[in-house]
Length: 256
Image 1 (cartoon, rainbow, N blue to C red):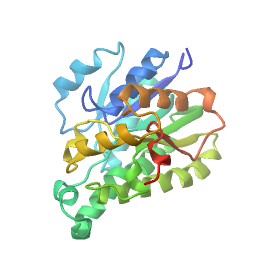
Image 2 (cartoon, rainbow, N blue to C red):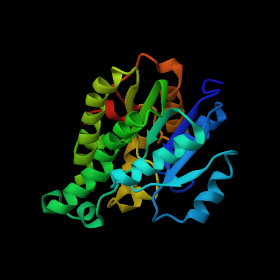
Image 3 (cartoon, helix red, strand yellow):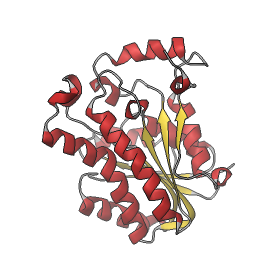
C-alpha cells in the first residue's frame, strides 16, 4: 500500500459527506495512520462516532482563525504521534450573507473573514508545522479549492476570492517549503453535496450542468477526490509541487 508507515493529519473533519472524510478513508485504506482536527463548534460526540470507522484515529480541536490554537493543536499531535508525513487542509468559511447576496455587497469584515479562515489558515498551519519541526522528510501539504477561484460561479462570491488567494498561497509556499524538501499542492474538486455547499445559493443546479457538460459526464465523489489526495501524500507524486490539480471529471476544460 502506497501510504504504509505514514502518518497524515486531516484538518477540518465535519461529517461523512465531507471531502475530508473521503480523503481520510482513502488514506487509511492505503495504509496511513490518520489523525484529525475539528472546529470546536462541531459536535465532538458525532465526530468521535464517525472516526471510529478508522481504527487508531483521534480528533483534536483547532480554531483555524487563531495561531495560538493551531500551535497548541499541532504541538499536542507532535507530542503524541511524533513527526508526521502530511497535512491536508480542508477548512473554509464565509458568512452566509456574503454568499447569498451579490459579491459587490460583501462587507469588509466578511471579506477578511473568508480570506482568513479559507486561505490564511493554510499558510499559518504550514508555518507553524515547520516551526515545530513536526514533519518527516518529503512531507506533503494539500488543500482543497474550487473552480470558482478561476471563473465566476453563481453564488460562490467571496469564497471564490478566498480560494484564489489560497491557490496563489500554494505556489508561494511551494517555493519556501521546497527548500526543506516539502511539497505543497491543491486539489480543485468538482462540486459535491457537502454541508458547506448548502450555503451556496442554487448549488444543486451546477451538479446538473457538470453531469451534462463534463467530458466524463459525471459528478465527482468524495472517494475519488480522496484518492487524489492519497496520491499527493504518496511518494508517487514526489516531483509534483505548487500545482492546482483539477479533480472534476474534466469540467474545467469545457467552453461555452
